[in-house]
Image (cartoon, helix red, strand yellow):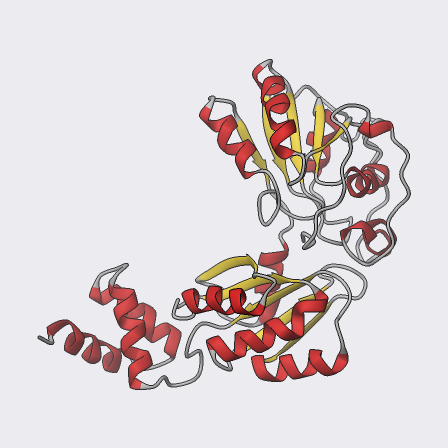
Length: 333
């Protein structure tokens, strides 16, 4: 899972050999300390010994998912790809170095993050055009999901350069699975704005979407964000997932107001956080005006029959009643 603030990077060349000290804290940089000892973490992979011996990769850009906590949650394909790449573009080389050390990977690492991407991207594209096989990783989880990389992928595709996904861990999907909330239709929102006024405006734009909402948030902002969520979205069922797949994984479930009060009183939680919020009316009969608003929003995206199915599923109301109201709305002058 990404941090709200990006880590410092280094120069285009020579970053892999620079000696750096691990950072303190409980963010993604703690993977080596917490997750390596977590449940199910395997022994280091014998890449050089032949089990996953590096082979020649086809030229192109490889988007490689890495663990969000427990270092055992990396795929064999990801390890082989990272070991075989001509270079690995890293959000923070210090974080990726821990994964490499755990699995005996000695690939060259190049910092690629929000602050240096505009400067580094042309050099990366030039290497790809010359036939290099480059891998892109974020500090944790799936690249491009609240992480740098989208502009690089877009430019590579525009030039006809092959782009391959090597899928794996995702904090958003893991939180959705554990939340106990409807997973069939969801919207990943990422990080909300830092300021309350901007955050509330952003929430107002999505409050009527008939889908489970998934957010990332930082510990210091969590209580205030939950309070804004409750005020703008209503007191919906929700879950706060912390330190997913790590030794101190925790998922706290409840209504938004109760969760906001808990984290206000308990203080900012440590670690990476994901917040999952139920769709509008989940388990709660809506007021007539809310039902009308949900139906009218759905009409803009789909047929009447599809809108009725979606709103009935989101509200828990009988389909017959929702259909009757939908016909009234459609047929009114």
